[in-house]
Every structure is written in C-alpha cells, then in structure tokens.
Image (cartoon, rainbow, N blue to C red; front, top):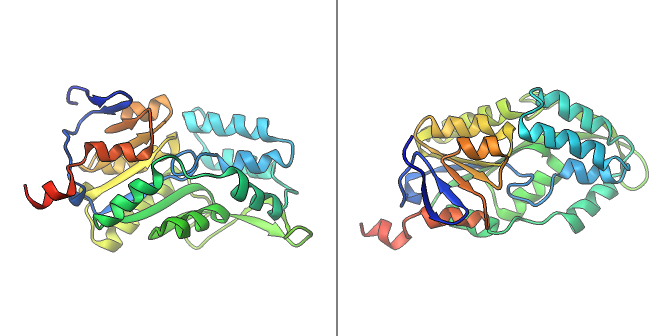
Length: 253
C-alpha cells in the first residue's frame, strides 16, 4: 500500500496515484442509500409504522458490518414494515429523499466521459427505478417489496418478492451484478469503479480495487473508509473529480 496522499482536507487516497483519467474507466457501480441519496429508505418507511428506531438500529449494525447475515437483517427489517402503505412510500420519495451533494455532477461527468452507470442497491425498486430514470442510469438492481391490495395504493406485506436473478440483493449479489454487467459490456474490472458507504458494498469495491480498478467510500463507515482506494469524508460525491485529469488534458497529454 502506498503512502497516504491527501490532496485536500476530507479526501484521502491510498494505493492509487492521482491525477487519474476518467477515460481509463468504462463502468461505474453505485450503491444508493446514503451514497447517491441522503437517506436509508427502509428506515424512513419504518417511520410510518412507528418502528424507525428499531429498524434504524438494525440498519446501522448491518452497515458497520456487525451483522454478517445481511439477508436475514433485511428480512427482519422488512417484516417490521408490514401494513405501511404505498402512499407513505410515495411521501418518503417526494418529501424526504434527496440526491446527495455532487451526485448529479459526478454522474453527468462519468456519462460525458462515456462510462456506463450501474445502480446496485440493498434497497427497493420503488426508489431505485425512479433514481435510475432521474439520473439516466444504464442499469439497476435492487429488491422488490411485496404489496397487497388495499387503500392508499396498497399495503406492504412485510415480505420481499423473489426475482429471476435471486431473492435479495446483498453484498455478494452486488459483486455478482457488477461482474455480470462488466462481462456484458466486455469491460475488464480494471476499468471499473464502485462507490459505496457500508459493509455490504465492500465485495463490489474489492472486486474493482483488487483488479486494478477504483473503489470509492463516500462518508462511509470506518471499515469501509479504511479499505477503499479513495475516501470522500467531507463534501460531495463530485469531489472524486478532484482526482481526475481535466478532459482537455486527457485529449492533449
């Protein structure tokens, strides 16, 4: 591991030497909750059931890596959402969810440089589908909440729906999805970057960094910051661009 390099406060780099070139990368994978967006959606949904504190405690432990079985922890949290209406989830999206600072700027820069962008989340399609459309992302994978017919657009049953690729998008599935999309695009992992904040993002982050690609921790848990090639500890997601060579210099080295 190379000596730590800090180009500015709150931005830590290890194992790579800036300036980097965006054109060296072809695929970027992002976590959603607390990475691209400002909330943990499952915690905010639980607020409607009066169980936010209970659910948030499980979420925090899972993010820190203290709960090793992510699937079990998510099933427990989703079970506590039983009875919450789809109308409340709409309220969460409309009034509580915001893109994190710098998210749009970073994604736009990646797209302008020709990268494909993957959103892979342990959260729910109700939110990931909208973020995918909002940012014009290329791929998305996340979990489907089961909804029963009822007033206010239906209610949550406390269960998730199995999908063609499996049951729950956990850390292993995030890594597998990254590998699947990279293979589909014919992109080596050395030309991939993965951005996340919690323990279940580490498998996809390691897949990139171990192959010579880039792993980025955004306002992450300590264990994630320590293992990432780049840690953005202050400021927005677009601070990653501080490590990149300007486009005109890439064209004219």
